[in-house]
Length: 373
Image (cartoon, rainbow, N blue to C red; front, side):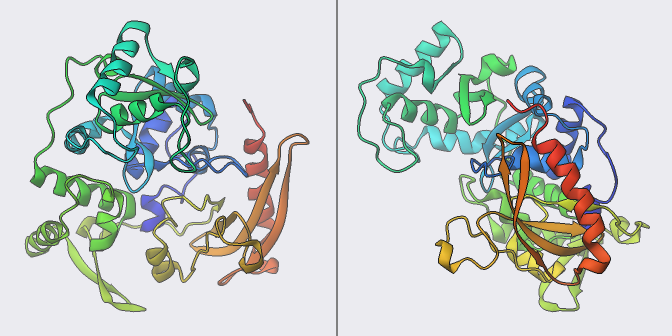
């Protein structure tokens, strides 16, 4: 059920092109963005696993031309469907009333200055701003340009939207102008937001727990109301719109699924995928461990001597099992995909799975080095 909800059990379920990107993001609810590029960045990688014909330009078109997806925070910075915008505008308004935000204190004057500049000159990136007086960085990911804080404050508060990406370079535009709106949609009501979290999780996960429903609302303002969502789940169980389940190896956690999902006749998954460590199938580590029996270790920030699997290890899904964990690195000059470590995990073994994993590696390498910009 979970693999089917994640669209990993069938080839090309969304077709191709920018429309496939929008459909995939809508099904998953979000696609996480990450800066690490030891191999292809996570947002492209996640989409490739659902769209075999995926090209990086497809995401650019969806974001900047068709404007069917936009960037905002879920549990991390992510692409989300533009049809979900009203479920985020409340958080944006809450950030607008918080003068400190995440990027440090930004005065109304600083923000107003950057908004006027974009209004007069058009969309801009931090690299377009050359007249700042540089300051010392407040933290590792900060910029020496004070305008960066103002751009981020405008983004968090919904006044600005990231209208395009070139690698990790973000271009900011006035939100209403980018979407062709007179004003942002009115924020959804609290009860609508609670239903949104539940419906999104059921669509993307097949079966859910209370924690898995709330996972993608980590940065919501006000914070996600777990008690209210628990009450909503209980109401749907009593109305028989949801069925409560227990897993054989986890009788302490309540899971829930729609009756029609339980009744559906699903073919056994047979495809093999090299997954990003940020793929929504594995990003909820405890859930992955309970259902797949696989505990993923993300060791990019672990000292080398203490790593068990490798710097940037990718789980391998084959059929309905996670069978391997591969530490990969892209050597872009020579266009080679280096296997730095190969670990069989769970039921995985060379006799049964190596041929399928090798074929998946070939496909991933071809994507990795195609239309590189």
